[in-house]
Length: 54
Image 1 (cartoon, rainbow, N blue to C red):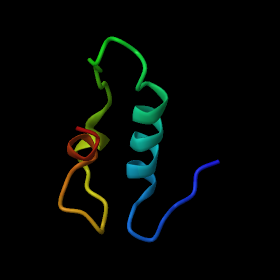
Image 2 (cartoon, rainbow, N blue to C red):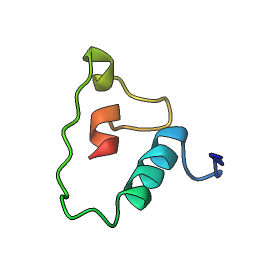
Image 3 (cartoon, rainbow, N blue to C red):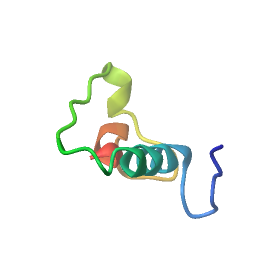
């Protein structure tokens, strides 16, 4: 279950869960695909969604 901490947002929590789940895999390359909405920013961040994931 996802728990949103006061100092993180949902996207940060999802990225952390993904990284933790894939920690044991030998390949450390990830291709991110999306649409133009990945260039949007959340109200509490200066980074786009794509930059937050990176």
